[in-house]
Image (cartoon, rainbow, N blue to C red):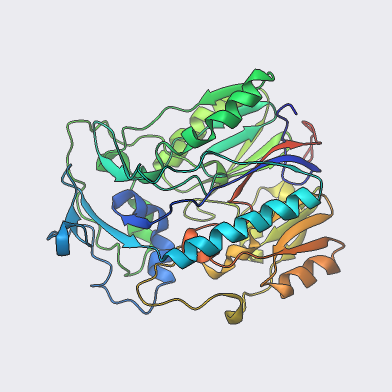
Length: 396
């Protein structure tokens, strides 16, 4: 099928599902801590300050690879291992997602798996561990017949879209446009630290010290995830929380402004919009709270709102102290629409399924156990490349 995806709800025909193969660890370094700082600070409350080292603390851990160790570029680093049983169960759950979408009539595509021999990547400015292409929504924005690779915000994911090359080549051969946004040098000085400094109260990423200098410093650069964009046909709602988000949004406006209307919302979250609000069909939003809805553009505030029920404690696995939780308990709001009336919902959230069913949706329960450890729900783990909808005007 040819690439065609303008919104979040039209009947789903083709979708890419991420891969978790050979996921071994999270690497704690500046870009990772800035990206996840809200949740590292807010959702690992049993950890003391010393457990997750401050970014400015030196001193290598055992074997030089533990928390606080210095990388070859001088950056402070620490890898947090992920237990293999969690990875194995995640792989099982991804297969379950694929089976559910296939049963709903969608063709499922997969990225290349991470080769276990590839553990690190390097640029002139830094080196980082590599993670598999799991949350593939983040670094690729599909706008109609165009693939736009977005500039990543986490160093370990810098080359993640390379794993999607066979998929992108296929769509390109069928006539799709394929664009790559400017890639940041991504030195410490590339990051706007204001959001983290202003919004985190205590927590393991404070205080954030002066960025380490680099010969490749060019100042604040554009960095931006596609998951910051809510697609509504001709309208794009974009969450902007930092100066590097704003630069990327400037680029997006210049690139697609003749085809799409872009609406900026400011600091709806630290980055992604899709665990705060999702459009389930024209005229209906799923939102985390009424407060979130009130920050949306005026035209969207007129849509019906389904407020997600408060997460239940029993909805989540219990983890050990050394396991790093990366998402808030609201991660299960991150649903995927297979059509305007059909929504994939975590089977561990029956209260959310019942809420959606009361509003006329068919909730398809699918297992997804370790979403808080791996930083994504159904919407994060998927990239919808072909939907039936077109470039419609839903906001007028």
